[in-house]
Length: 233
Image (cartoon, rainbow, N blue to C red; front, side):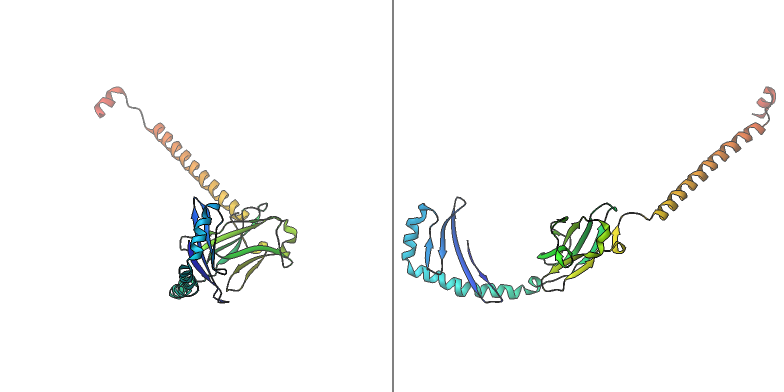
């Protein structure tokens, strides 16, 4: 495994060249001393032979200090539009029931190197906080949630903070008025139940009326003597 890392702010470049065997390090290149490190005894002979090859070492040093950074900068420039893509999420507060934790949910952000936490008096909270994983959305963006479980008496002191590199922090104050929940409005629920009961009562009344009408119709039909009945048929 070999390659290089480039810090676009400081300009520092670090190259690496690692050889492994059976899942363990075998030989590691040290560019500062221009020599190889042998983590295992079996690699000592190879290390000694490679250390003597000054021409090969010079080629590796040129690759890591010149060619590799040039290629890396070129690829970063070509892919800048996607590498520098930044999307700000929508952040909302959710709660299933009055006794459930309040969840601060952010969705639609990019990239996934984001941080979200609860704070109290401008200090990050660690107790009574449950951090969820960053999950992908179908459109390539990401979502995450952080739950807070505290009594409702002092909610005004809590804030949900979402941080994404390059954009301004998003801060939401914990307020029951902005919490989205799947709990229904009690008055609306009573109205729905009442309407359903009324509809059921009307249906039963209609069935009773039809049965009553049918029975009365049968009673009002005169019975004919057998002889007349046969003539009528």
